Length: 445
Image 1 (cartoon, rainbow, N blue to C red):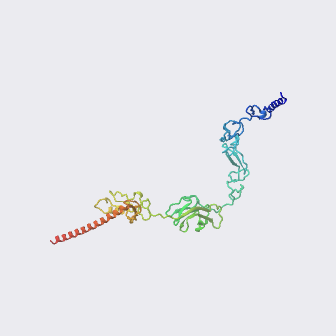
Image 2 (spheres, rainbow, N blue to C red):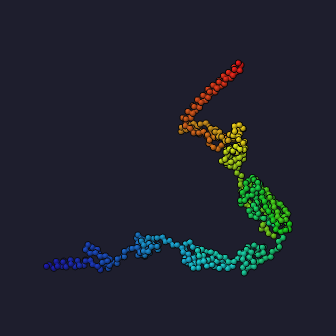
Image 3 (cartoon, helix red, strand yellow):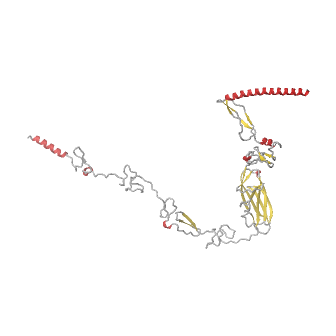
């Protein structure tokens, strides 16, 4: 064999050996007759990645959440979907939860202690925050650090604003307004209509242009006679101002004319003071009462509203027009025109009087007056009909619409009726003349 041919075949063999793929050659090979992957050749193809699944704590495609478990109710359910967590608040678990103002656990309901002029907060058994105040000047309880406590912080009443006892000069003169008495409604001022009915609402509602009476009392708290100065005013307008002696009490009624005031809100003010002497207590020397002045509303008379308005003799509402029973005695009733109708005893008999005719006259009978017919529009003619007696019902009301052809027939019929009536009138007149002539001839015979 030729040496060159031997060298050629040996070269081909060596090339085949060198070019053959194998695991560990550093190449992840894939061919028709040779296949490497992470499972059969991790040296060349690398370690296989684990397959994604819900609960692996990795947020994989298609998952809303992944908390590393398949437990429902913890915010991420068993199929890796976000779920709403509803927790009910539990008072007493020492956790401040929704709807709670506080939560001290087992200490809920334990009262705190507040020192003088201090306050403290504690949590109730319902997890609500409460404030407790300690003692303070003006609470009505005399504390160890107080000389007195009369429940207020007013000076001059024997116990001053810092709860110290103070000397009070003996009072010799004291007059004051009486706030509570009948119809004053604790304001010290009573108001009534001219007819004597007292106004109970507050603010008192008055009508513009009307007159009212204002009443008040002033008491003398000591037996010694005194002299007082009194002012009654509406806002800044003085209604009356005068001086008066007072023994036990002073009483007065004053006229209030609202004609001179515009509609609106006002304060009726009563002031009293001692003359030439100091009043020991001035807290009861002023009284107020709110009032509202409104415009007078004038209503037109309406017969049948069960209210007797101006121009009406009576008004029995739906009973208007119902005749009374006069079979045993005379009686009267209210007509539909709100006039009083008198019926004599047995007035229904034809032999006594004409009250039945008068009743008919007073009964409201509609008197319809209609305008002329309009021009035809859409084959319809219209007109307007009004009751001049204003009976307020539609009895026998003529039609206000009609067909154009029908009205022409009616007009023609009316003309024929007028002609017939004219002929009949002539015949009647002729007959009367003839009868007159016959009577005259007979009287001569």
